Image 1 (cartoon, each protein chain N blue to C red):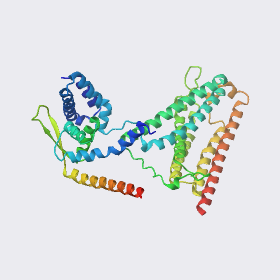
Image 2 (cartoon, rainbow over the protein chains, first blue to last red; image 1 turned 30 degrees about the horizontal axis):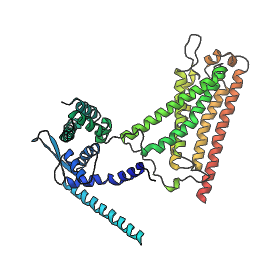
Image 3 (cartoon, chains in turn orange, cyan; image 1 turned 135 degrees about the vertical axis):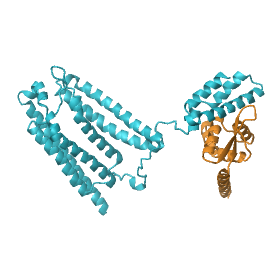
Image 4 (spheres, each protein chain N blue to C red; image 1 turned 120 degrees about the vertical axis):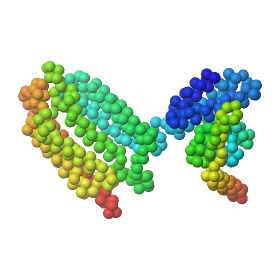
Length: 113
Length: 320
């Protein structure tokens, strides 16, 4: 029997890179930290808050996201949006994700034969 | 304002680089309040909600490290293997050697055979702790400053030949360099921090202070040249005949003056000899001199033979 621990580590490894893809995709529409967290969770990407917030800042530093402070609401919020560079990277990542899916499908079919 | 949230923010921001502190503070506070509001909207009381949200965010310093992209490890995978090798190599040689030397010195020069084993073990242990501390500290600093050591990349040629191993390996070189540095450090140490005291409690240098203006600089220069040789040898990767020749010359340049100084009774401080009856009277000094000469000659000869053997082995390997 495979232990829960082993299974969870593998799933985590599998999911790790997809958080960046999901964030870049979701932030085509500007959003702030917690709203993004909920949106991602709603689409089946549960992310820990303590992972997502630092990640957003890192993506911003890398120039993949731009940000703007919105002070009109009850509390000041930092809105992130995917930049042009972010779109370029996102396109490459999506291509690669599709390639992985194709390869996996190929392997599944190959193994069936 | 929420005291727990305030404390959490303060604890997190302390560990974040100052220029970004304020911005992260505003953003993180808003995020925490958003999360709390959401839970309160779901029917929780605000105190419980706050506790749960902060618990979910986890250890403040871990969160700060994620913001600052800082490592939560002393020595990471980049340097771990080199650190381990250097440490292993140094710890398997130096503490034992130092312990034996101190023990022997205690038993003979110190006239304290009873305490010799104890002080030998204690000094060996202290040496091991010191080596471990300084080596680890150096690598931890490298890790944090992201210094690139430009270590040679691993490749299949580095696989040890079975049973013959690569002749010159990094840990060997590091150990040799450390030995030379320790020897160099011994020179001023024995002068200023000698453990032998005269009847007034003044420290007596072990070596004749007159040598500072004559032979000690020469010996130190030879040791420094030995350091250069170690580096060249490492970069060459194996013993070559020119290296063997230079090594032999340096060995002789160190051993011959040393032996000569010992035989003419000019190495040890005359005050030190006066201090110890067994050295001063009878044949004590003569015996000690002869033992020293034999040991120095044996080490020199062994070093020479080892270099020749290794040079021949690598020469045949290159030819083959």
